Amino acid sequence: MIDIEFELNGRRVTGDIDDRQSLADFVRDHESMTGTHLGCEHGVCGACTVLVDGQPVRGCITLAASVHGQQVRTIEGFEEDPLMTVIRQAFRDAHGLQCGFCTPGMLIMVRDMIQRGICTEAAAVRQELSGNICRCTGYQGIVSAVLLAGERWAHGGEEHGRLSA
Image 1 (tube, rainbow, N blue to C red):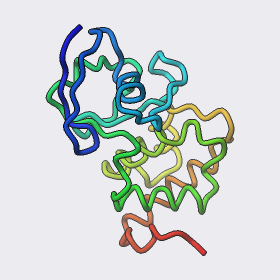
Image 2 (image 1 turned 120 degrees about the vertical axis):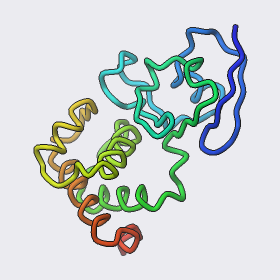
Image 3 (image 1 turned 90 degrees about the horizontal axis):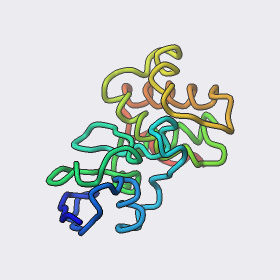
């Protein structure tokens, strides 16, 4: 057992954990952040994607002990984030959602893509999201949503983040 301490969604958390415990298991079981989904548990599907010090990582293959002293952000940590608000609305408007299992990891990846300027062409979006598996959609709605979110953010962003009537 080892002690860890890090910032989770803006607040300090501590834990006494098994040194082999994954970050995804820690945030779900110890901190009740169940928006971090576990799909494949091999780092392939992307459902467990979280940010560690601003970089997307697979929570299922990241050891919780490895984030000691760092900042971790799960999907629950984006409630007041203007860019995430725009992305969520674009996913609604372009029908990029279905069952929702892949959605938290997908949204975190899309936010990172927009910040890096990757959301201007469908081929680039498909390539960047190739590590996020959706078993429900045909991806067209997701790609359309990503392109729409990128366009909206580039053209003022926040006014497009409000829910449509």
